[in-house]
Image (cartoon, rainbow, N blue to C red; front, side, top):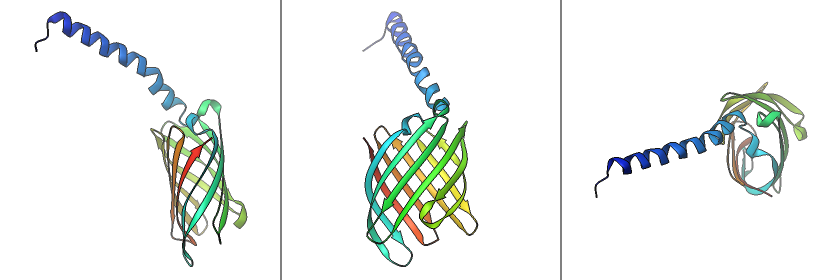
Length: 164
């Protein structure tokens, strides 16, 4: 199959038009990184505790985006048969960097959040005196995965959440 010059021009114009249609979407994703996080989330997964092995965990979360999708308030409550945590966090995005604060109500601890966000993926380090954990949150449409890893009492949490 051969292309004529007019076929090539039509193809080039179609590709250019498609790029123009996608540009606002890509710009919006960069300027409003938390816009797709807002809503009520629920799901389950597993938790690994230093002294108690691995258990099934159930979670409910409420996320509120503000400042045009640049800021996020996160509230996540999770419970297994023997363990629970209530995490809240306020995070602001600036470019691809995020920063903010977090607290865990059942243990009365709080600290700082630092990390990155790109393409619906948050990679963050949460810290306080004597405790640090990594958070990886991936959001795709109405599905979200949360992975927390630490060397403390709470070793690992892996959750699959659905918005709705």
